[in-house]
Structures are given as C-alpha cells and as structure tokens.
Image (cartoon, rainbow, N blue to C red):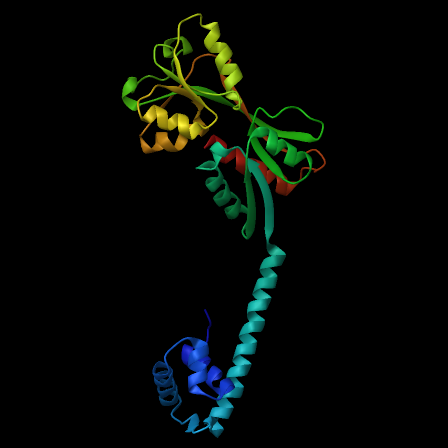
Length: 297
C-alpha cells in the first residue's frame, strides 16, 4: 500500500510510458478505466495534465510539474519505507526454539504471544521433533532452547528448568464420573488399551508399570502417534495413556477427558534446556520465564 493515491501513481506510469494504452497494460487495467482516473485527477487539480496525440501523450506544463513533484513524493516514500525496515531489522529479536510435537497445538502459539509481548519485534523459528532430534540440534548450536521430555544429561546441555508432568488416563468423557480427580493404573486395565509404542518416551515406564500390576489386560492397539491414539479413543476402541500436553486440545474441545494416574512413577519430566556454551543473561532468563509461565498456565 502506498500513501499516494492510485490516480497519482497511474499518472506517473502514463507519463513514463508516454502512452495510456502501454500504461494500462503495465498496470493490468482497462485503458478506459485508466482514462477515467486521469479525468478525476485533472478535475482535482483543475487543469489539463497531458495532451493526447497520434504518437501517444504529451505532458502539459502543469503535467510536467506534477510529474516532477510525484517523482519526489515517490522517492521520499521509498526512503521512508527503507528507514522503517532498517530500524525494524536493528530491533528484531530472533529465537530458535525446539519443542516436542505435542506442544505445537497450544503451548507454542501461546509462547509466541508471550515473547512478542515482552520483546516486541520478534522472529521465532520453531522446530518440532522427538527428544533425541532436538537434543542433537541443541548440542550443535542449531537451536537456542528446547522443551522436551526426559532429556538425557549431557555436558553440552544446560537444564534451565524441569517440570513434572503426570501421565493420565485418556478416555471418553462419559466413561468416568465428572468428580473423579485421579485413578489408579490397576483400575484402568479393565478396558481395552491403546498405548504408546516403544518410539515414545512414555512407553517403557508405562509398560513396566502395567506389568507390575499383576493383572490381566488387553492391548488392542499401539502407535508412535498420539494423535492416532486419541482418535482411536474417540472412536470407542479403548483408553490410552498420555500427558496433559499430548491431549490438551481434544480435552478443551470436550471430545476427550484426562484423568491423572495416582501412581507416583507414572510421570514425565518436561525439560527446558539451552546449550551449555551460552551464558544466561536477562534475555535468556526472560525466555525461560516465558516458557515456564506458558507451560504451567
């Protein structure tokens, strides 16, 4: 969008091309529409701006004056735009943040808004993936921060924060009474199970705890996709086990319910990490605080 009227901008093209037809082709509008614009412009200035000749158009004295003035206006507008863009570049704050996929639905959009409110002009490159992929990118300084489950200890990684996240039973809302605040894993084994497979960090801990119950159970489906497991639960195939972050969207929409498990060992550790080579300062502290506020919120 330009601060100059379309009539002024069209006039400059006509004057440059010395032809209404050529200008119309360049502007991708009908020549008749362009002629109407010029009639409006001449009426506004109260003078004739150009003469139509067999070979094209010829500017009048007043048209020459307007052409020169319009060129100055356009040059000034371009200089102003460049100065604004340069100023924005100087104040642009950029972040590279990696996160596990389940945070992309609600946590990461909220994080962007939080960072924007605190830093102003920002550009965030979000990278989603599994914990191993994200930690590898962090250790090679391809990411500034990661938010991932159960990040392994490494001398190249600084743990800025750790938050415990309970694993819960994911089920249809009508399955349990609305007042049910938590449930034991043992009581969940009465229903068909759709559980995360070995590619997901929750699998090993969850499966070992299921075996510890010394009760019969029926696993009807496994998958490395929490979205697929959620869809299976919504279709009435069985129940599943996830963290709140894996299922937040569906719960907020009312299509599924999340009931935390009482078992103390059934929880994940959501880690906020940065490269150990980067020193914490006011900016990094603000980012970490923003991530924690969004996660806890």
